[in-house]
Image (tube, rainbow over all chains, first blue to last red; front, side, top):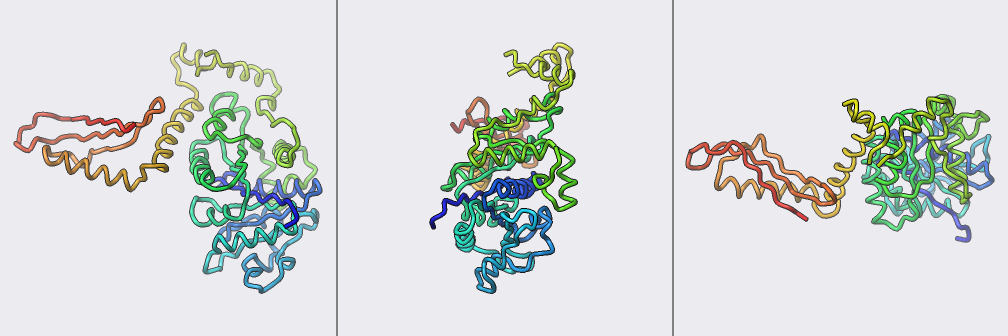
Length: 271
Length: 106
């Protein structure tokens, strides 16, 4: 393997925190920056990455077909029309009887590594076999969580498992951040979540209605020219992932009204 | 840790902001999870719970419906806390209503 491919697991433990949305948006952003990128949907039972990317009608083969030699890798990869540097590979389909084994995932990841600069693996929710399979295909990980009790708790369990593997680095993305609620101290702060999970923070993503709208359309935000807050965050995460030394978006600076400034004052630690 | 808002809330006798409650609850539950994961699996805790009950039941009659055995963490120390309400002693006298048995794990 001549290429220095980065295979990155995107996981969370809890479902619905934004793994797939992050995978889709990061995939597009990385591809857009010129890096050839593959996104692998490791959730074969409940796959959704195709929907978010608007590629649901173009899937013919899966990674399982490649392993079974029913088709070549090139035939199974679904290239994105608007972003040709990006390709999607579903691991399997919901009708499959047997789930792939960790060795199968390793082999797929190796095949992808020969062709792409980045391989993002969208991990299924939970900490069982599906997660462990996806994990075995990756060298590094991004843990996605929300500033919310159950999401942080599940993230902690996932981190516990990741820490016993060779995966490194393990970085944190805090998704669905609401600056106003944080300013009111009615939501766990970025510092709270980060210090509890004690992982390096890759970035945050602000809560944004545009995420739902872009999902409806099957066009990730990073593909559109909108000025939405979440898009700005996804681009920030993507740049930081590629090693750019830029600061993380600070939710405290996202509100600029007098009320926001007052709320910021109220957060001042006095002892 | 206290913020300006917490101080004002306290002075006005109001409930503290929910983020603080969330942080405290999270720290507790994670301490529990992390111990569970490392050395004391749920199975082991269950086994230990049964054995403790067997021993205690030799001497007193326990109210099994109210029994609670759990791990609690405070200030980085984890303690095994068993709450075993006693119905009566085996000689028939009802001497005690409640008995707390606490032993430190670490």
